Length: 368
Ligand SMILES: *Cc1c(COP(=O)(O)O)cnc(C)c1O
Image (cartoon, rainbow, N blue to C red; front, side, top):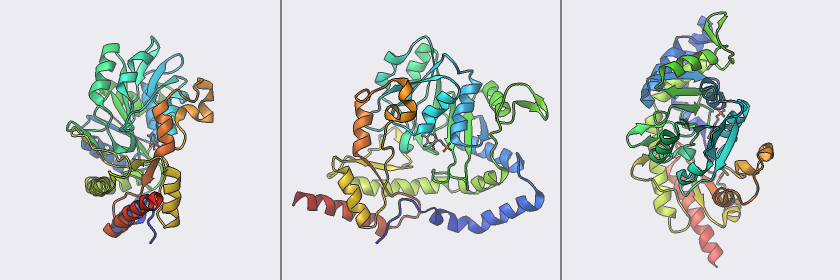
């Protein structure tokens, strides 16, 4: 049997006709840039997250970058984030000229709030927590620190569409949040896309200008800006897909529950804490036999992944920050022991049972 890591066809097949009809309409009307569909989607996704404002942008990296620009965070400023994340989190800080200050992660793969305070200096402007794999960070602890030092909280919500913390959604837990609609995310476009949520009216206005050449109206440029618009066709696709997001997240959760109850005696599994609703963008286990298990699964037709094989502070691009091996022991040890198992809406009972059986076989075999 073959089990893919992710099969987007199963997500898109039932929506294919509706989407194609909508795209055809865009072509017939030449409706491509910042049309009605963009505005409608912005309202709908902001509403979904529970925020007053929503601005669509070109991708998740630029969502983070535009938030930082709108907050005037640049040269000689510092932003605190986690060593265990996807490159874009840190790349956004670098791209505005600020300095990323890293801290280690903890068992749930999110930033360890107990390590933040010691990294705060007079240059610190913001904390950028990452809701990695669809699991919300401990936002109460982070918010308390941010308030004490008057810092912005910028959520990297690029992996956590729909995830909840104490009945509030990702995107509504700080001053502003960034989402990505990269095709493989829980809510994905047919290409790149991104989004910013906030409850701050001034910030929202500025963000909206920055994403469209700094214009207050056409050809009147008030501030330096970017071209970072979401394509109108992508907005239409996302409007159709958004209606299914809760259903898809529920499917992921059911699959995760099955993995957890079947595997918890063999490997370390992600636990869903009571005050958080994990949406399992990725389902990540930990085991010391990671490489052998990954190969074993591959030989038996099961695709798995590594998110991420090298923590930020050991990436060549960030050599100049001056970190070294041993600086973030948890992030380093996780990079060597994590394994992401297949999880996606439409994954069948047979497939997940097969994956679980192969993992059980692996540990039985390795005991022999
Ligand atoms: C995907 C992702 C991003 C960036 O999104 P793009 O749309 O690919 O630019 C940022 N942060 C995290 C944690 C991500 O997973």
